Amino acid sequence: MSFINEILNYDSLSIVGMQKNTGKTVSLNYVLDCLPIDRKRVAVTSIGIDGETTDQVTRTRKPEITLRQGMYFGTSEMHYRQRKIVSELIDVSDEHTSLGRVVTAKALTGGKILLSGPSSASGLKRWMKDMRRLGIDMVIIDGALSRLSLASPAVSQSMILATGAAYSTNMNTLVQQTAFVVELINLGLTGQENLQRLMPIEKGVWYTDSEGALHEIRTVSSLSQEMRFEGMDDCRILYVAGALVDSFLEKVRKNPKLKTVEIVVRDFTKLFVTPQQYRMFVKSGGSIRVLQKSKLIAVTVNPTSPTGYVMDSDRLCGRLSEAIQLPVYDLMKNGACN
Picture 1 (cartoon, rainbow, N blue to C red):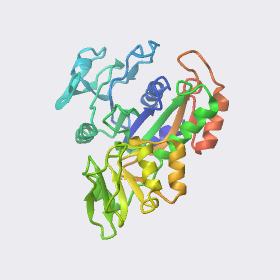
Picture 2: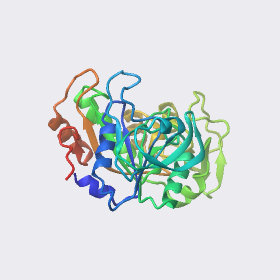
Picture 3: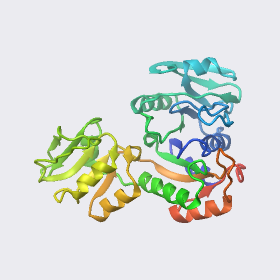
Picture 4: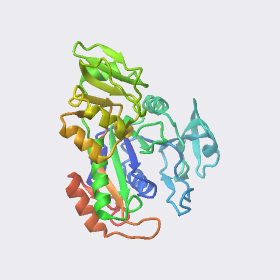
């Protein structure tokens, strides 16, 4: 597949699923199997737990993660002890997860592995830095779009999105919702000055005035029902460090002093807004930008739902590709490395 060659242009890749059972692990295994590891030193980890044989929610079978000899991996102490491969221990970090510290090792034989790596964005960034110090050329992250995940896949330079019938068995809905997520992934970066000023701020709602001064709005939470934007006649940039939700976006849009403001969020995973609210805000003159983003390389589909419903793969790939202007692949149907 041509997107494997494009991945080689970046030093990090996240593979994220719209929902469970959309083919994320199939996509991860495809990438791990096709990368030229004779030329690239590869390390892989996961946000959360991945590689289980059975989905803990749906009780359906899941593909396991397969590493090749020579690949590096980061996982929890608990899952490292359960490994089925021969490996060389490289490092035991101070980074703690609910399953113990994060262990980094090198696979001396190929085989199956359970991955449960750093669970925070800061921990993931530190692990990635450690890998670069080890001479790793590419870090691959088994990512998550979940609200429950504290680590964002947008810390990587590139991304693959997995979608499918598990998200919706209605093709129109599936195409529309996936296209909207792609639109959010592709949101532009805010200006360089904003990047430097806002990146260290991880909590609260803030704004900058026309002089460039930064103010915290202590009376406003992005999740609160009662929101009064007072003393903000000179607001140019509105920064939401946490989740951006419909009710907040609607309040901003209906405020005549703010409806053309630029809202900045950390990355697309902080956006929990409906297409309707998003479109109304943009139409009224507002814009949304991000502090960090990834290059979306491709979208993969799993046309089979956990209940056994099967969509027409070719039709789904064609419609989705037309909607997002990106290649779309069914890797179970056409997944041979070439």
